[in-house]
Image 1 (cartoon, rainbow, N blue to C red):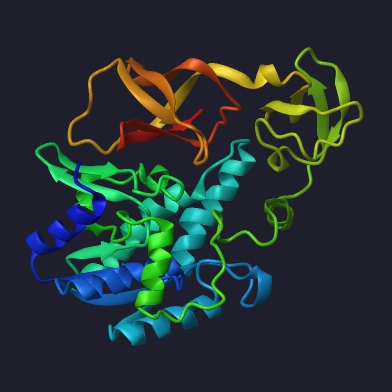
Image 2: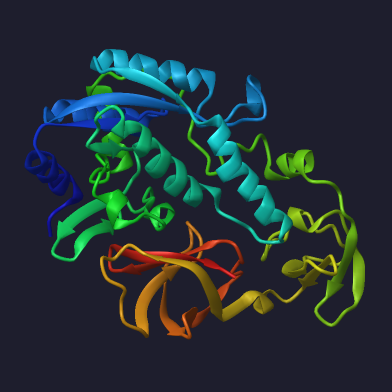
Length: 366
């Protein structure tokens, strides 16, 4: 089987000399991706640093993806590689499309995944629209994912390094977007990327690992407290017995054990009743397991919509082990049915569908 590394090299050769905008965060992955593009000699490479919204301008309140230090590192890497470097200010768009949307979903009682939305709307949406003004043919990122071209269109594939694979976060992308995307490090392991960083002598000392929600400060609860008001309500069992009180349903997610603060535990969050402001808990962890869930906002990366019922391997969280399931569709509504019950299937999170190493598409759980 052809590796992602080989496929990337073949793609760069067949596309010819074109201009590519590489999103540079100042981290190791995007920096090595930029270096590989430059080394290939097949592109005119342009580096771009994106500024996103953050709580404050300094310290821990800065957005982890675009801090002052991150911008300085990205500039140094671009200078070393001798590529043009620009800064795009997306703070307003990021606040509206990512942060405000995230808080809106939290108020509705679900647990959204802002990184999935950011990839579609900002990194592979707004960035490419801006990049086209530079005459760019492609945009590239430091995502651990692969692309494969064929008669069925462009396939989104898992990365070589399964521990770093980020294909889960890319399920909202379309064929039109993927036609203009490159993932230079998808065919490398993290260890190989680290070696490449040393080979290229990239100035990346002091780089910390990135976190999934970049705009959150120290903890998600601290962030929510600063943006959502306290709304106390009752904590009850599934049969209606009142056990205590909570300070707001947005501080809890399905399957959560910590922070419930009830004697005689442990208790697990089983459900949330938004209309009545009730937090429903259980002491029996088996209650968290379900075999079927509804899907909305379904997106197929495939060129053509598949036939149903469709057998897949599905992931309901990034670190969730993919599980055998069947997707059924009736009256334009989708249901995901697992072969074996899965723990803490959470409304608002993404269910992503795989066939082998290929990402077929995904949806939002409800």
